[in-house]
Image (tube, rainbow over all chains, first blue to last red; front, side, top):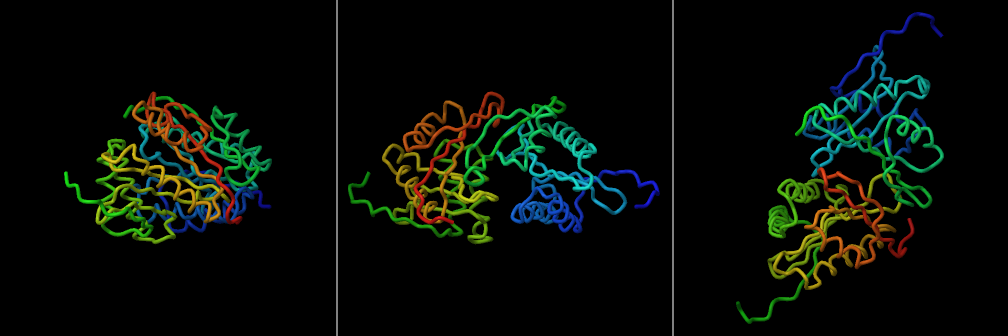
Length: 171
Length: 171
């Protein structure tokens, strides 16, 4: 371990071609995502690179020098006025518990509210692996709205949470 | 009105380039979809034409001669084992109440079960306009699992229904 000071964390919203592999690595290393989920997380970055903002996928990356420490992918929900989805959020496994996920989440909420979003939805699994994930959302003001039993697999329910955001830009 | 016998209804699963405009017409004429919803319904056919079955969008069309009387679009839900979504179902407005929607629905359920799907999800709005839609799902064994208040717009909730299908092909 080096005792040299780490460069500061910087934030980035544009998506680079290298982010596709970066997201694969980050979501794989986190231990929270299956290979099929990793593939979809990477696909959304691909889609964003291909279609730009019209893809409907927005990103926030936490960078330290050339390293991506964490990221989120979110976007407006089609056919709704004010509802947005947080599709993915992941933090490098060795950095968990240091508040980076909370910082990413707060930035996403600001960006969504700025864009006219009034509700941010997030879904996760009922499996024990995701207990910290559920605690993370609940502690940030997300309310559990629904449990869809056996959604992901037998015995693995989908839990739907949402947070009402302050109105910044009424659409 | 002609008294000539109508040609029989035939069923079709492949998607033709003309279906994009056909779906626009059908969903617009039904009176149940807003322009942004019509656009998305048509987009899914476009996506299917571009990517084939890999798009994840499956279709069933009820045809009478060259006319499309109704259709549905459905597909597997990514990152789930056995869960499928019914994205769209529409019947020509002048044919409502004659059982065509029910026939389309039954065919979708068969196709989903055949492909290994065990649950079919469908979402609709809480608005009065969709009372017949909600009745349609409920009368076909769909259970209301969740109500997400203000999801589509203030005062316009998303209602989530699902039906458990008989296991035909365990995946």
